[in-house]
Each structure stands twice: as structure tokens, then as C-alpha cells.
Length: 476
Image: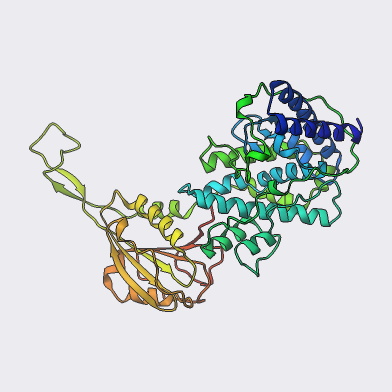
């Protein structure tokens, strides 16, 4: 089958789109469009497999295809099904030219290669809709910069659609003139999160507002037969006229667990790699092989898991009480029971030099309270930049002060000196939240245990921290 065949399928689909937009949907038109569209995706798969220096075709070999005329998303990969499903609304996707369609297909696959479905859930444990929106912008910029770079390096089968989110677009949207291109999602996510800005209403609309009919595209040689995906309900049809901007990535609305999502991503990636021979693997970009390596790394402990482990090492102690039954002889009402007696002392130190914003403060204390809620505790919060700014006690969530004081330089010694100067803290657990950039040496903390949690990256400037160091990004 020649390039004319796949181009013909796209042109026929465009004709059906025009019919639906002008006259409304009908079962006959939608059925015809679905058959042509699924065949078009089969041909796309075979063409991408024939490209020796790309991995996209092997991912499509591990997926089924589905047309969903009711979707407000241009395309997406449903990881909650087996095998995973590449799902698209032809009324949205096929408004683009052929090379732009290929760009969008590769865009969705790269999100999986970079493990964005799992990372999205890890980055937003509270499931805040605003943070999901910011994550999607950051993830799109990371993926689209990669694809645009491939095009600049001579990849001719794709063309960048107008209106895509890139690092340059993010820089304009959030007024970040020094934003670097070709970075990972976390770099862009942290950068736009730190601005505290909402997404501008006049910002990019993820391609739909700039849809064109497309021109002639690259030559292709491919062949295959498509298979249908069932009848569509005419009343639920969504066209480009109905959508101001397409929906954000959800990948699978029913799957809300980062670990399960990560497993689904790993399974799909490894299935695709397993289809490649040695010669094909040798032609893969180094960035792809590095992404595969990271996906298959053993899971690392999250900071809250380490904190929970530390709390568990502090013996609670027991004291007798008449208010509880004896566990060994519950029917002996004359015998006293017991209850935890020892008070857990915990110190939460926060680097206020710009390392921790209000959203992170909320997340940090939600996790801390979840871990210590069943223990009798006394919590002290110390805010410090180049010097200690504020020290206060906390008994419940409402006591937390969200507007942290400081924002100057970074020094860790003032916190350590404050703790070491008071015997009260000798049996306390110290948890220090910082971006990791500060002094190289500190006094030894006279506390029971110490945990450093890095809010960005995985580097701590202190050469001897006298405790465990873990990144907030690790396993979280």
C-alpha cells in the first residue's frame, strides 16, 4: 500500500468530519469514519516500524486502537486495560495534516516512555485539579521539546502542529525568561509552580485553536486491515467546534494509584523493547534507553516511608490505667490495662530561603500528621533561612503557619545550635526540609535521629549530615 492510500484514508476522514460539522452526526457516517480511521492507525503503526531509528512503531504493536467520538481529548493511551489502548477522537485528531497526526501519536507515546502517567499521581497526592493542569503543561513542554529537537535533527516524517506547548510557550505564559529548553517535566513543573500564577486564559490551547487542513505529507509504504471498536452513540459526539481546548491527560481515569500506574507503564515499555532486535536497540536514542533503565530501577523509599520507619523505632513505653481492659485477661475487670506513655518529640525544620512554598508546607504536614497521629506527640516547627526566623509548637493541623518567614540566604547551623542548646530536644526526631544548597559543615545535632528531605534534586551541600538524606522526588 502506498502513501496515497494512507493519505486517501485521511482525506476521506476529513470529508466525514466536514459532513458531521455541517449536518450533524449520523451512524452511517460515524461507522465509515471509524473504519477508515482504525485502518489509518494500522498503516501508521507499520510505517513507524519501518523507520529504523525510532521506537514508536513498537509501542503501537503492543496496543489496540479505539475511536471515541465522545472524547474531548485529541488522543491518549489507556493504561488501565490490557493490552493498553491508543484511544482518539477522529473528529479532533484528523483535523490535522498527516505529519502532524504522526507528531501527536509520537507525543502520546513519549509521555509513557518518560513515565509521566505515574509521575503525575506522585507529584499531586492531594489530587488538586490546578496542580494536575500545571503538571500537564510541564509534561507537554518536556515531550514537545524532544520531538521538536528530533525534527531539527532531520526527522522528516513529523511536523509540529501550531499551538503546542513548548518550553518557549511556558516561558511566555508564566513570564520566565530564563527557562531552559529540553529539560524534564520536573524542572518545568517546579518553575511554573514557584511563580504562583494561574494558567492564563489567553494561553496556548493545545493545538485545537490552530487546526489547519494540512498539506501533502511524507511518502509512506504500509499495509494492514483495521478492526472496529463498536457502535458510537450519535448524541455524545464531540467535534472541534464543541471544544475550546482539549482535555488534559488522564491516561486512565479509573486508575488512581501511582504504583499501579507505574507497573502498567513498565509493562508496556518492556513489551515494546522486547519486540526489538539487537540492531534496532542499537539505533535507539540514548535518552530512550536511559528512560527504560529508570523505569526498571527498583523502587526507592519515599521520605514519608523513611519517617514512618524512624517513628517506629522510638519505643512508646507503657503505663497502667484503669480506663482500659487487660489485653491478656479482658474478662478480669479488676486488672488494669496499659496505654502508651512516652511522648514522641519531633522537630520539623523548614528552610525558608525559597526552598519550600505554601503548597509543599501543606503536603509536608499532612504526611507528618498522618504518620504520628496515633502517637502522643509534641511537635516543634523551626523556620530558618540564614538565621532562625520563628519557632513554635504545633498540636493540630490548624496550628500550622502557611506563610513562612524568611526568604534570605541558607544556613543550617542556626537550627542545629538552637536544638543543641536545649536538653529538651535530646530524644527528639529532627526532620529538615531544604533544597540542599547551604553550608558544607554543621555541628553534630544532639538529637535521637535526623532526616534530611530535599525538596528539589538529590544534592545536599553538607558533607557530613549526621543522618539520612532523601529526595522528596524519590519514590514519591
